[in-house]
Amino acid sequence: MSDGWERRQERTRRDVLDATGELIADGGVHGLTMRKLAERAGVAVATLYNQFGDRDGVLVEFVSAGLDQLEVELDAQPDAGPIDTTRALFDALDERFAEEPEVWGPIFASLRSGVGAHGMGEVGDRVVAYVEADLAKAKADGMFVVDCDVAELARHIFTTRTNRLERWAQGVIEWDLYRSSSTLGLELILASMLSEPGRSEALRRSGVVL
Image (cartoon, rainbow, N blue to C red; front, side, top):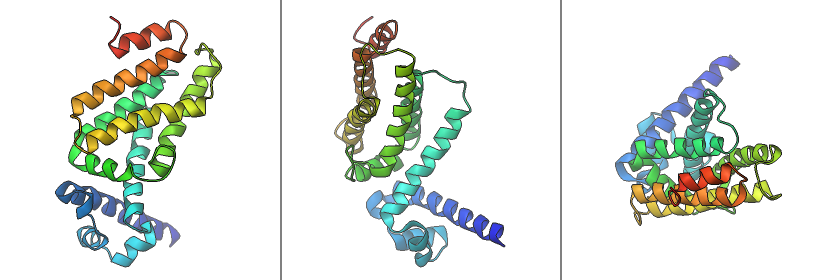
């Protein structure tokens, strides 16, 4: 009986998250209401509040589900090694955003106003933790020229990128400029910290050094 209940809960969760993406694509985050979501997903409004709390809870769960899937996909790939793992994470995130800009643009324009040092609450915390773990491996392998606080470095890398993501989500810059400026920012940060040959590789990737 417990297994059946859990399966129903998971099915409801999937239906709600699918409906969330559809509603945001149709009318942006402002078009996402608990009533419309309940109608689209075929569940009671009370069920949404019980399972997700409120609309912000739905949005956080939607993005978290995307991160869950992304982590599974990355874990299935061969180990990229320190630093390249961080690069792969951001590349994979950008690929996901580019697939459905009509969904992810409004979501990140909304989430960016949340709490936390980087402005994205628990969603951002997950990405920062992933990057921090990778940087800790790089530090342990002696890849940095100086002793550094990897937690602070991870937050700085993520905040720098999300600042650009916010500008794209709000329509201030085009996608191509977001991508190129984000790559430049990440690689210059890495170049300032990495020893050779990592430093030269980061500069090459940045595009400022041929």
